[in-house]
Length: 330
Image (cartoon, rainbow, N blue to C red; front, side, top):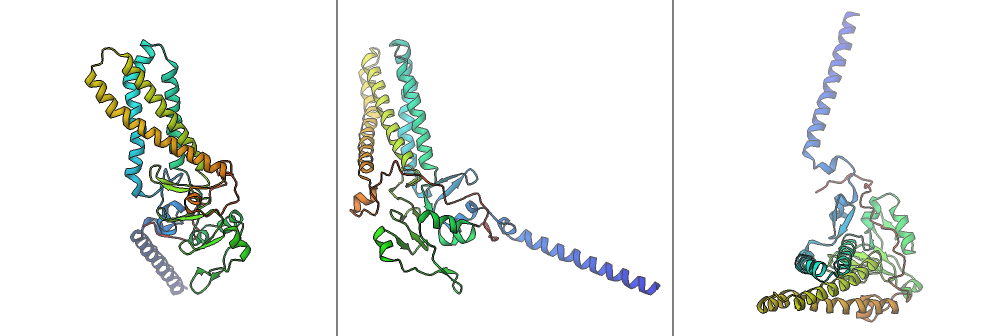
């Protein structure tokens, strides 16, 4: 019995030692793995492996375009911020105190606020990206959601290659505008196009705008037009304020007046004219039921429905959902 007790004790100690060593080896192995390999990461953490060139901010709550648009985006913000700073630093006090035209600075401030808000909404909103096949397979329930959104059955998957088989689209679907995307491995519904800059398919794709650092599509087209309208009003308000200040301030020297007009007035006026033209262009397109790409290419794959009044629909990205398989966050 004593020998038997000793053998049981030795066996227990051996098993405990083996378990401890196994745990230590596992812990050491996990420390060598990338942090994301020890759990199921969120979609935005592995987007560059499963998606295109878009970037995520604020823990996946905001989505913007590729980094290549950085300087274009800085240019757009500069034309918004610097003339406004000059207006409120130099002209607003004169309008408020000397002319008692206090509504002008207040209205300009409200228009500036709305311009910034709509610019951020356009830049940081999912424009309507259609998830790639690989991402759909990694997020639970996403395949069914995409199928309902595009109104078509998903292609069958080849078990040997783990890739979708190119479907044979019916003549009816082709006549409606359905196409197959070889890059994303998905069926594109009518008006959906692949953006070469973001490297994603976008629903009701209008165009890629580097100045807002994002595609303009189904889910942010209304924000984009509201931004154009607000930017137009802001430009008018700033130009009018600077004009009143320059013509009414008798203490201003002529040399400073020339510099003021050349540095602030002329660039702002040119920008406002360009924005007005772009805004009118998109209003006309909306009335005709066309997107920018359809107008430029002459191919209308839509139904003639207004792009502004159409439903935004839910985002199909689900950036904060976790994928169903462990992936390393590279």
